[in-house]
Length: 145
Image (cartoon, rainbow, N blue to C red; front, side):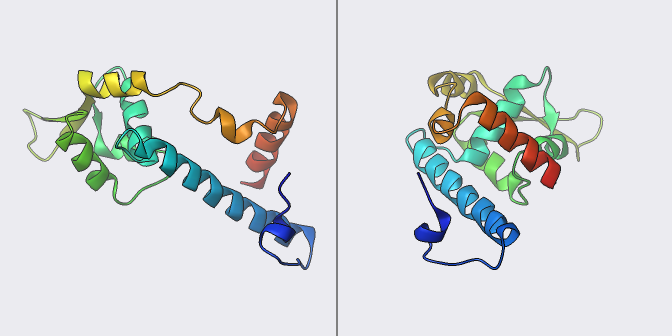
């Protein structure tokens, strides 16, 4: 089992400071694991999130709607979508009524990529937690926010 104090060779003023630093440290660990995992598929975790949002939508979505649904609010969402578009995972659909409006839709190639990625992509990250511990952790994080 991990021990933050040993991992970063530090002591803490109190448990609230330790908890906050542990959240930041763990978030960075999760990001690192996900970056490494998605590298094999040629996309980033943020791009995966965009593709999942689009797959779950009934229709094409505006860039603003996609940004609002992202887990990690990304100021460079447009750049992420540019890269997905270049790989033919998404397509831009200009509005016939207003040229300033562009909708984004996932392509068949994007759906094929998602289908190739295991559905339990994050399972290993939580393997040390029981179902009830995972629920407790989630509830505590909700309470914190």
